[in-house]
Length: 351
Image (cartoon, rainbow, N blue to C red; front, side, top):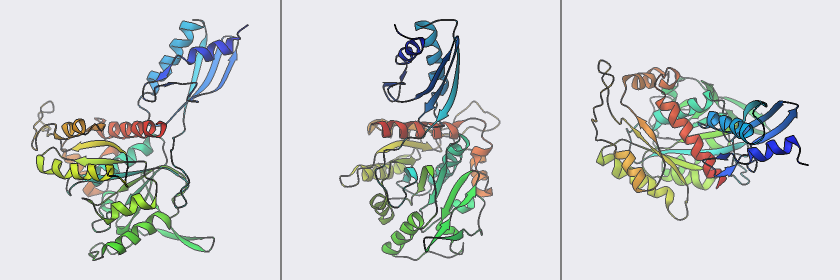
């Protein structure tokens, strides 16, 4: 005779994660199932704390139990999260589950702005996040996070010195801009810049991270190649603006990651400065740089479109003042891009 617990487990097998295309029990997302008379309790373990489907999955579980077992059961679900990883052995960053490259074809499209705000948003959802400013020649993230002039500490482990990332707004941070005078120009040849990146990756005490976002320089350079050769990159995000000249360069950046020998998955594309809405006319949209160019590029190359960021004074001011806009965000655009990215990472790891 089938026990009540087995009936409940079988009912939960009919609930499918729409992204991963498998039922929750087979995915190991149902844990610690306990039944006491009419009381049912279990943990729903999500693939990321930033999962945008958590309420839908929770309601689906309750509906399946009531429909297939009994309507009078009282179901208590504890939401939990364990960020997935598909990394094999990584001697440089063994405790980092996912390494995500944030890239752009050209400068000035807001790549660093996206990297900073997405990193903070993921941390706000409960993930352990690091941000590495790999723009060796033009580091801007110390300014965006209000830590210009601060210096990372150095600790010694097993006879070796390691940089300790700064902590800002819940994320771990390292940048070459924290190690050099802010007004100095980095006049380095490619090999020197690549060596600096390897040191920021391997000679730093990053610790246990769910996501390490790496803000790359514009274009396609030695830094990009060094990153993908040094560590297993989970995937890349391409940032662009809608106008044709930016899209041409974004296409080149996208193609670089997909080249044989590099083979880094493109997790999605972000369209920045997509439109302008005057504060006095909040419902209106003016497409100053063209309309939906990034969305069309994503569709053309069959990569996920993570979202559009409007041209807002608050985002610019937040970057200049060291107070990223996501900390005061009320429209949810930046947070939505972060959850979409986390979703694509989980899909990538499952496949």
